[in-house]
Amino acid sequence: MAAMVYPVGTVTNALGHLEIGGCDVVDLREEFGTPAYIFSVEEMRRRAMAYQSAFAAHTDNFEVLFASKALPVTAAYRLFAETGLSVDVASGGELTIALAAGYAPERIYMHGNNKTDAELELASNAGVGHLIVDSFDEIDRCERVLKEEQDVLIRVTPGIKPSTHTYIQTGQLDSKFGFGLEDGTAAKAIERVLASDRLNLVGLHFHIGSQIFEIEPFRLAVEALAGLRGDWCRIVDLGGGLGISYAEADEPPEIASYVDLKIASVREFFGDDVRILIEPGRSLVGTAGVTIYTVGTIKEIPGIRTYLSVDGGMSDNLRPMLYDAEYEAIIANRAGDPAERVVTVAGSHCESGDILIRDVTLANPQVGDILLTPATGAYGHSMANNYNGMPRPPVVFCENGEARVVVRRETYEDLLVRDV
Ligand code: LLP
Image 1: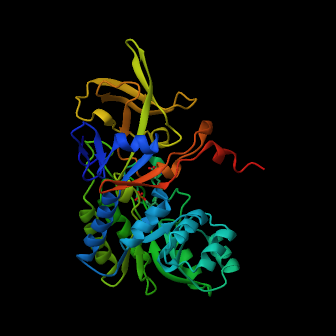
Image 2 (image 1 turned 90 degrees about the horizontal axis):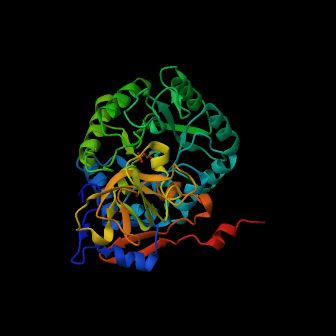
Image 3 (image 1 turned 180 degrees about the vertical axis):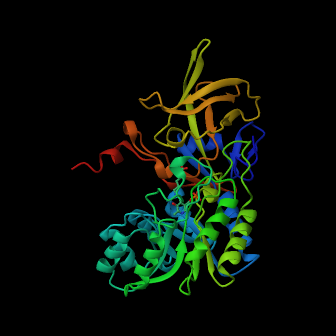
């Protein structure tokens, strides 16, 4: 069991069962069934505090925003609100959940490359603190829809490409997001917003991508943006993107060194007085969450491969199919047993591509065992779907040996509820 991949405090107990947040996974399965997303509250809180204290060591002019797309669950918004984080929402839906969770509207930052009239109205009526403006059409729409003056940041694509999967690179000129730097549209957007009587320009934003291990691209992006700055620029928002360990060999930078570099870059290129914002998603919740499944069938094709099928798959974790993401796994009810059998973990969907993990070594798996995949806390629940009529799993928060369901399992009745 690799320490970095699992939530803090994960142990194998005397029965050989894995414990997450002090809860025995065998008991968790008994109580909540499988598949289920299990979270360590301590890990989430610890990571939020790591961000907060990394900033506080240098400045009090900062805000850490929970990028809620990673885990848009009311209880997660509440938890991060309690630890002093602001929040980034990317749609009317995420905004609705953030408000329902009790987020103060002035702590909400709203993104989106195609915010609709209805979303802008919702944001404006709620009193959302800041919009991150993404296009000229949106500027026109804001002027038409917004009733009151609105503080905004402008999203810029700085022309920096970090090394990560192309689907999650967002800082390059050829992107659907934001205003280009190289082609001069960012400068034009600034002029346009400064001339607006409805929009009040207060800062700049970039987000260059996700699951990033190098920190230098963030410095380059800040440097690239510096040519745009003006007296109006009181806020620089450097987006999210810090990677996490999905496998033992992954070595992402520490939160503190990532934050230090971001602060130093802003100080160097924008001076001491601007407010620094960052928007972590994955690095707050990714390693805090694991998914538990029950092994249902084991099919051995001699000389070729052994397929081990679990009771979930691409409906609860799309990342292997979308990004070729790689995961580890463990037989969690026999966590102390040596891993010696190589299998391919498949889901239960009607597709050959429904493979969660290729070639993982497990402790002689048996039908009925609990298969646990770590580091599934980010973008698992949020990208879950009902393919093949699969009800979405519950979200369970564990802390000090207490487990509570914060999102219940979907039922077959839920699948019929929207029929008219
Ligand atoms: N800010 C903005 C404007 C973003 O678009 C994102 C993520 C974040 C912050 C948070 O980034 P993070 O800290 O989580 O890297 N579904 C993909 C990830 C897509 C990320 C989209 N934007 C995945 O599962 O890898």
